[in-house]
Image 1 (tube, helix red, strand yellow):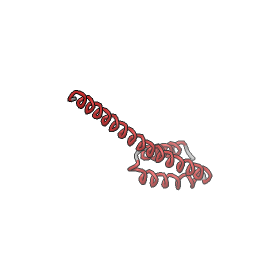
Image 2: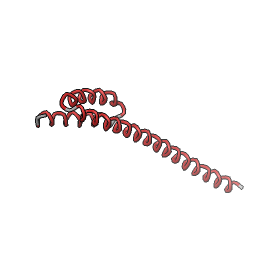
Image 3: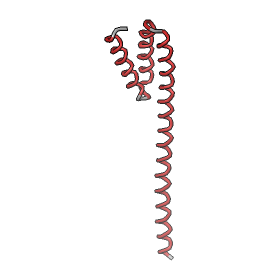
Image 4: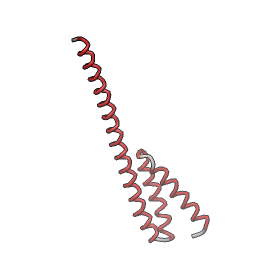
Length: 100
C-alpha cells in the first residue's frame, strides 16, 4: 500500500466516521464504509476484517449514545414539568390560604 493510497483510505474512513455522528446518515456511513472495506480487503483482508469489527462496534456505540441522549432529554423534560407543576401547586396553596 502506498502512502498516497493510505492517506486516501484514512480520509475515506474519516468521512465515514463523520457520517456516523448523525443517526440520519447512518445508512450512508455504512455504504461508504462498505466501499472502503472492499478497497482495504484487496490490499489486506485481515485488516479489512478487523476494521469491520471495529466499525460495527463504533456504530453500536453511536446508536447507544443517541438512545441514552434521548432518555436524558425525556428525563429533563419530565423534571422541568414536575418543577413547573410543583410551583403551580405552591401558588395555588398560597392563594387558598390567603382566601381563608
